Image 1 (tube, rainbow, N blue to C red):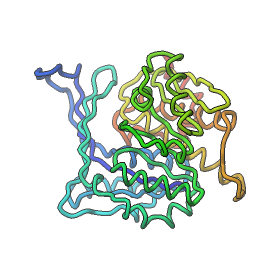
Image 2: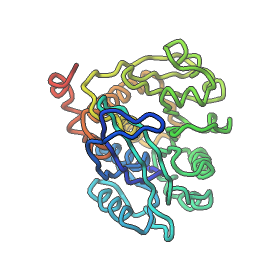
Image 3: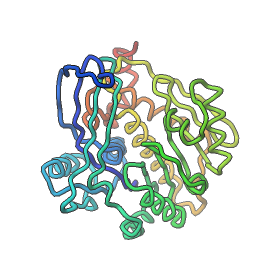
Length: 323
C-alpha cells in the first residue's frame, strides 16, 4: 500500500501561443478547470499503475473542493482521509501552457497549507501500515518533516519529490530513502548549476554526501539520472511530440512509487529494511519513464496520467507516436 500525503488543487489552465513577457498582455486560446495538485496527481498515477493508494489531503468547503472529491472518487483511491476545511478555500494552480507544451505555474495553497505536525501524527498508524510514503512540498514543510520522521521510525520506505524546491534541513537527506528532484530543484538544493551531465553528477553528489541514500533526477527531454554512493546510470527519454508537460513529473513519481510498492510486497514481509540498488530500480525507472512519455502527449494534469494497460502496451503505442 502507498500513502500519499500532499496537495489537492484545482488547476486553472490557459493555453496560449506564447507566455507573456513582463507587463505584456497576450490572447489565450483556451481556458479549462482541471483537477490537479502534486499529491493528488501522484496518487492517481500510482493507483492507475495498480497500487493500493490512500490519499491524505485537504480541500475547502467550496465548489472546487467538491469537484476534486468527485474526481478522486472516480479512481481506485481510498479518499476517506481527505478532509474539508471550513473558511479556507481549496488550493488552486494557475497554469499557462504555450504552443510547445512548456508550462508556467503559480500555486496558491489554500487548504493544503493548513496541515500541522500534529495533524500528521494522527496518521501514524496509517503510515505504519504502508509499504511506501510519498511526499511533495505543496503542504507546509514542518508537516512534511513530521511525516518523514514517522516513516523512518516505522520502517516505511519514504519517497520525497522536493517540488516546489526549497532549502531543506540536512537531516532530511539522512531520513528520506529516495529523493526525486528535477534539474532546477536539484540546482537549488545543491547550490550547483545543472546544465549538463557533469554538473548533474556534481550536484547529485552534494546531496549524497549529506546522507541521501538514492537520488533520481528527472531531466525532461534528457530522461532521468539515478545516483547512489556506488554509482550512477542515465536513462534517456522516449522522444514524443509534447502537447502539455504539466503532470509529467507526477506521472513519473506516482508510477515509480507503485513499482517500488510491488517490489516491497514481493519481499514477503522481510524485516530487513528495503534498500534497492540501481539495478533493482532500473525496470521501475523505465516503466515510469514510459508513463511520463504518454502523459506529455495529452492535455491536463490528471486526465493525462496513463493507466497500467496503457503503459504495458507502450511499445506499440510508441511506434506511432515517436519523433
